Image (cartoon, rainbow over all chains, first blue to last red; front, side, top):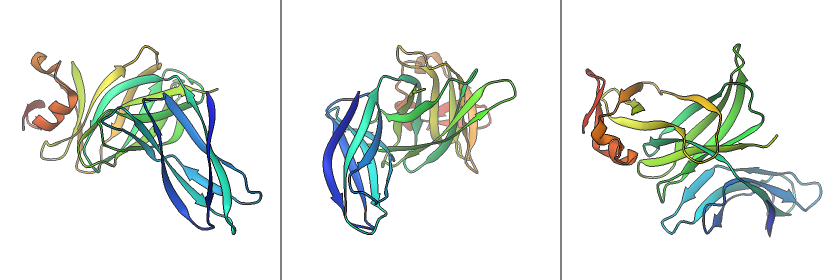
Length: 161
Length: 75
């Protein structure tokens, strides 16, 4: 389900780190920015997620105004159902590069690391895809435990096309 | 139950993986792997039956890898 949230401004050259909070796990979220001000580039990244003790879930977003004037923007996104795969642990401060393998090409997979341990931010970057001679496909994802204790997480994702 | 465990050169656990679909939806993933950082090793370790129902994070915190035997031991 698509959504658009908030109206925000940001000075030129500024970067802000945001967190968007859901009362419970919303499912896999794809989050971006809808630029309102013409002619200004707004860059954004989705560093990761955190689950809190009350069950609420945070998605983090960084936003940078690359233009030369203040800009206005909305957050926009879409929630989807997902598969969930594996149960993993990772020490605080550690980064790991993973590969997930499919027997064939599964389509365009959006893959994220879903934290389970409360209070620990898990950051992730899905960096690429590879097809092998046997027809299997690999998706690569880098996962960082940005929290201060060992944490548990799943991989989850969905095919969007 | 077999776990994929990354340890440092002293056998201290860096990460544990229990592979497989967790929810109702089928991912189609046939296998997965992690690249060990320098000084780290990936171990495939058959876990004793008494640990199969122990939370993965409790194993992570309470055990280390016996590098000579390739098994888990209390840390």
